[in-house]
Structures are given as C-alpha cells and as structure tokens.
Image (tube, rainbow, N blue to C red; front, side, top):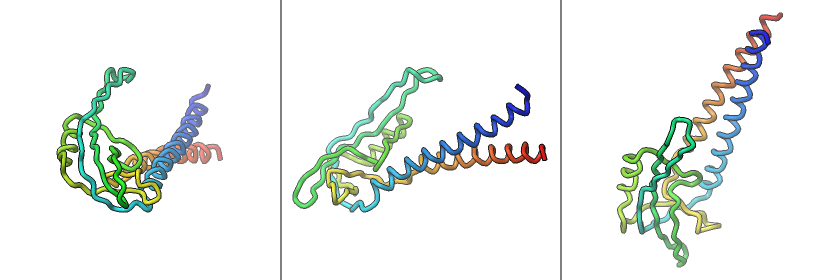
Length: 161
C-alpha cells in the first residue's frame, strides 16, 4: 500500500474516531440530563460512608487500582422514607485513594446534606449534580480527531486537484 493511501486511511480513521467520541459523549451527556432534568432539592441524612477499592488486573499497564467513594443516605419524601447511595446522577466516579477519602470526609455519618430526587420516581436520587465533564471531554476529544481528519483529507483532496 502506498504512503498516500495509508495517509488517506489515517484521515478517514481520525474522522470516524472523532464521530464515535462525539456520539459517546452525547450519550453520556444525555444520561446525565435525563437524571438531572426536573430533579427537586431535598435534605438527606448520611447513614454510612466507605471507600471501595477496585482492582483491574486486565489493564495493559499492569494492575490498576481505582478507589470509589460510597455515601449511603436516607431521605423522606411525602412521608415515605427512602435510602440510596447514588452520589452522582448518571455515572460513578473513581480516582486515587486520597481523592476518594477526601470526598467522603465532606459527608460525615449523621450529617444532614443537600441532595436531589426525581418527583416521578422519588427512589431515584443523588447528592451532587456536578458537571457532565466526561461528556464534554469526549465531545472535545472527538472534535479534535474530527478536525484533524477533515484537514488531512482536504489537504489530500486539494493535492489531487
């Protein structure tokens, strides 16, 4: 295969990767919007906290350890008490041990905390609306790949004319 042909395939590959990242970012963002839209504020009481450790031995970089903060809480809506442990509306977030521990330090057991619930399904709740950063990161990365691929393909197309 000629170098020009390989480069054209690279441009097409970058465009396709960009479109895939944009699509996935939009799906994650849509899940976040669905969970947050219409959510009403509520007060909850922290029941328990923990940091869970997850070990991934299938990583190409070797063993990868991720730590997830866990906060269980209870709240009452229209006289009915619910218990949940969803911190974010759509996705769980993990990171380093210090980050996860620092996160749960803001939620001492027995404390009253603000949260959000869905009026149509009050058992669906979360504590932190947050920004759908993962969605925006994927869309931004996709836009970069898409731009690189389009520029590369346009250069190749103009070179032929």
